[in-house]
Amino acid sequence: MRQLGRDFFALLGAQFLGAFNDNLFKQIVLLLAVDTLFPGKDMQGFAFAVFALPFVLFSGAAGDLSEKYSKRSIIVRMKILEIVIMLFGIGALLLVPRQGTAAPGYAWPVLLVVLGVMGTQSAFFGPAKYGAIPEIVGGDRLVRANGGIAMTTFLAALFGIGLGGPLLDHFGPGVAPPAEPKLWMPGVVCVGLAVAGTLIARRMGPLKALRPELTISLNPFGRLWSTSKKLRGEKGLMSLILLNSFFWFNSGAISQAMNGMSVPEYLGMQRKSEVTWLTTTISVGIILGSLLAPWLAKRLRLSWLVIGGTVTMVAAQSLLLLIGTVVTRDGYAFELAMGALAVAGVAGAVLMVPIQSYLQDAPPPGERGQAFAVNNFMNFLFMFLAGVFYQLVVASVGPTIAQACGGAALLLWMLKSLPAIRAMHIEGHAEWT
Image (cartoon, rainbow, N blue to C red; front, side, top):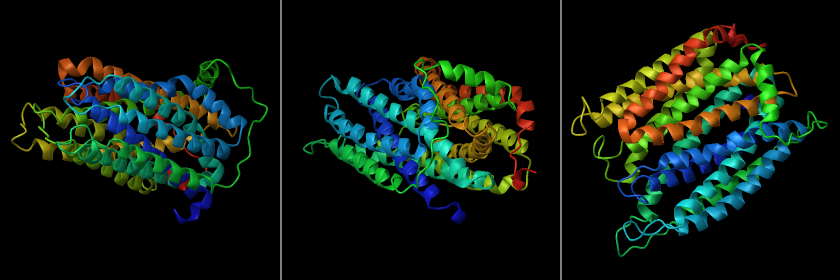
């Protein structure tokens, strides 16, 4: 990635620290929602849905803003807002009572409010970030740039999710007396990440507004529908956006299932930090897959990557159905989970990177921000639905079957989208020929 330039690496650093922050704070809230604030219950589906909902509500306006104004200006301002949100996050964490001593009180709704505002900030950051990539690097380096973005995003997820458990173990409401909980410490870490990300984002060079005459629609969904209609007629883009969205639905189900499998019926983990091993495994798999995807793209047809990645991912996560049934926690359940998640991570990245690159290249300049607004809207609508779906079904079918349903939905839509997958091509990219 040495040829991608200073502006790209400033964007890369800003989005890395932003993704780190999102995943760290969200993972802390998700872990608090599993048994800590609500003993014997798994309430993380609510938190997952609250984080995703702003992307559904504000993606249309975010796409318009990214075309009307400089994407660089939007990126920097959203990073400044991230600092403010994380300061409120410290206050929300201070409301969490010691485990087993009191009802959650105001802690749970305030945590959800902060999580929702954090999702809103990310919703406005996304179209500017992805729309800026082709402006910064050009078409001939787009696949390499997206491989770097995907790799560092999931490396950030690895660090953020992996750090959430240990921080709760050391500073959370479950620390053993006479030690006192110090949940403000994770909040300070989040503020520090937001400050560092803002400083890095400011190193980006100027980017001009592509459509300053554009009128921002007051209807949050109005331009989304018209853009979606246009995308349906262009190169199968809407079908591929939906395939990308089913990938995120499936990923959301897997993410919640990893936390859900920590209970005695499945993996019987004793400490929150033990969940880190599962999240680390899938994140490392995604990082390796992000590095592998551009290399494979020079040697294989795009359709082979998308189809092979989908089938392999679903097959790997299907192995999780054996945990708690055929393989018990006293056997090799933990090793089976790690192996299946590693393969699913690699395959998921091989599927995602080519689609993401194509969705940036195919729309004409001046419409990429709006296209990515539709992409963000659909992705997070499906992530919201993943939270709702998981919350509705996990009590009756368990976490392993819940995530398997997500995999089945991804596979079925991939089969329906085969004509669009076969037609994918990026102009100027020798790796796709």
